[in-house]
Length: 394
Ligand SMILES: CCCCCCCCCCC/C=C/C(=O)SCCNC(=O)CCNC(=O)[C@H](O)C(C)(C)COP(=O)(O)OP(=O)(O)OC[C@H]1O[C@@H](n2cnc3c(N)ncnc32)[C@H](O)[C@@H]1OP(=O)(O)O
Image 1: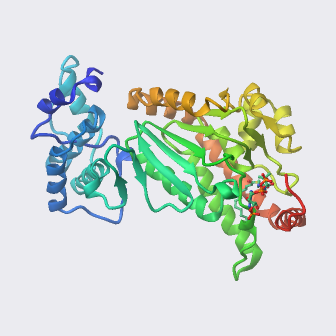
Image 2: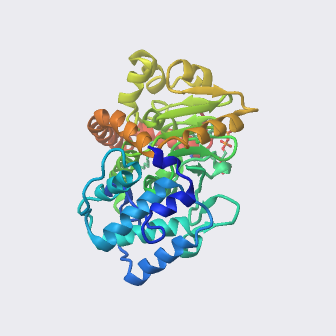
Image 3: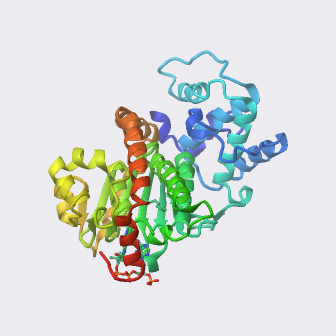
């Protein structure tokens, strides 16, 4: 406990051989780049790099570095457990012991990965400009940034109302997997421009592979299931900052978020029947639980569009803010959340989610299987053709 608030200089003193750190449970820390193996030289460079860090990475990270260093150099924790009043050494022992039997090679790699994420010069795929937040590169459809303990994943196809094309599905999965392993405390999804997201990009239906529509529908059912699984299994608090209207899958997924903040301009619309489709994102299970079966029916079957205020009254939205102050108010709040003790936050999320995880996976599998059939129906085909030929809009 006291550890978490130790000043940087003081913390350095109790870290053996300058500053070594690392990971927590193997789940959290495991390799970013599984195919790669850090050499002894990479590891030594990373150890030296840590000494050059200009900014205090925080005690949580330092503990991780300590544990990974010990694991990489000495193997599994071999020290007697310190007494409960020896707070600092106990925290270090806990961090090291939590790595269990993680192989030295994996610990070395995790150490190098962690240092890379703190130090721009070691990581070619992440760009850190002095004085600004860390901004990911390599995404075509998203802007991903990490700052103040918050990883922000922003849909970035504003001219298409942030419709989710196949590339974006893949990039969101990639960004979520990276966020689950980075040092942020919470992860936020939001949209660039006037929409949060207009849901599935309807042009996803037009590119038919040589195997025909059946094969396309099958592949997309697999993709969708994998995509929704990433939300079910996400280990940190996931927060939606709904900056404007939301449609389809961008609405249904909200039932898997831990908090949803919306501006008063936002609307929530799931016109599945109009599109000849059926609910996904586990909404056939989460929505009736959140808002009562009858209210869920109005949305998911009859396509009733809710205002932000209505969605809040029905429990889908946590709180609504005036558009004029939305960003300022919400981000102030999120920054305060991100200062909470990381382990407590993560553990609480796990306690809440674990009761439902198995059920959610089963619901997801079933919804995707039903949708696979729907995508091959005339009702769905006609709706998509109508939209693409501009005969209909929501
Ligand atoms: C064989 C099987 C393949 C299946 C692949 C599926 C993979 C997983 C599927 C998961 C299931 C998900 C379901 C859903 O999300 S259902 C909801 C789908 N969304 C919609 O139906 C919304 C359609 N869009 C609209 O009705 C309007 O665009 C909207 C009301 C959102 C905004 O209207 P407005 O007049 O303000 O703006 P424009 O229409 O001019 O839009 C600007 C440009 O953006 C394009 N746009 C917007 N939304 C979409 C979209 N969802 N898909 C594709 N394109 C979209 C629009 O066409 C405009 O483009 P242009 O400027 O180029 O004309």
